Length: 345
Image (cartoon, rainbow, N blue to C red; front, side):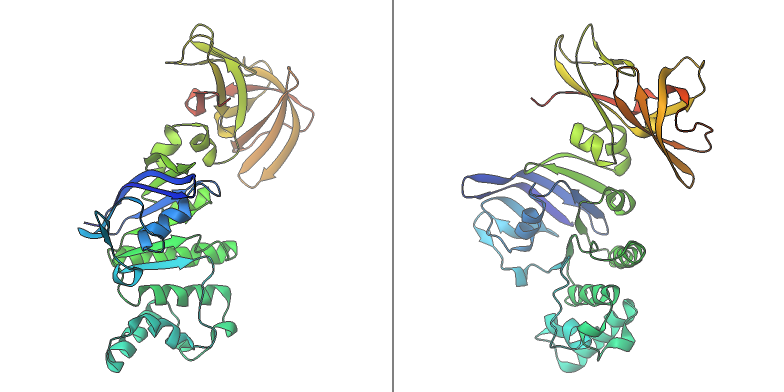
């Protein structure tokens, strides 16, 4: 049950924008599709929704074939709800009329009852006769959600649906939306460029690059064992060093790192997360450095440290630190946050 996408591929002219994408979302799960602009995320959503003609692959929802093997259900028959960054509410219709738009074919009493239920669910009952332009961004988002849910979709697709909202409102509306989805046992596929959003709400994350899903897993799995430099850097800024494999290791400004499984002489990129580094007083036996920049962000300190070779690295450290700008310090490295990959030439 749920959504199953198999070997989905799509071209625009000679350009392959979706390359053998496969994923499965169980009822009540929230999956996040992440990746840089132009990697194929939105096209994947449009193929699932039926807004693009399927060229290759197969899409099923609750064991019902939506597209593939000569079948191509139109969007209105797929029972898929869509929400985009642009809420696309009809300005000439009142709130209740916007929500009722997808309920054609129902009798008046049934339609009004459904609209009332949904407005109550999103705490917008008092605005049933208001016009969209009189509402705040968060209120419009709630109405767009109610409209998407009105026909009782078996799947909800969200394309950057919350990015237009300010930070505090975004978290509130997003959490309310996904709670409703989980309670309804509806699978959700959320496209986002925001790493924190994907980590907070995703049961699984699918990292997409150049049309392909390069890694799928829980947020913890992607964080602990990133498949490539893109996934390693998705969770925030990182320190990057170039080098070559010598006797199974690679030299970095922070010392030697293991390069398991890579051939002698291979050009590699070493990635070190800022949280992998701990700043200590001189004499602790670590790598010497000097504090260049220090910013206190509440319980977290962000520092830029200059190394002996002239390079600079970023450090993110929780807790108290007495190091000040200009101080000589030493750096201790946690190898669990260091990753070595073949370099992309």
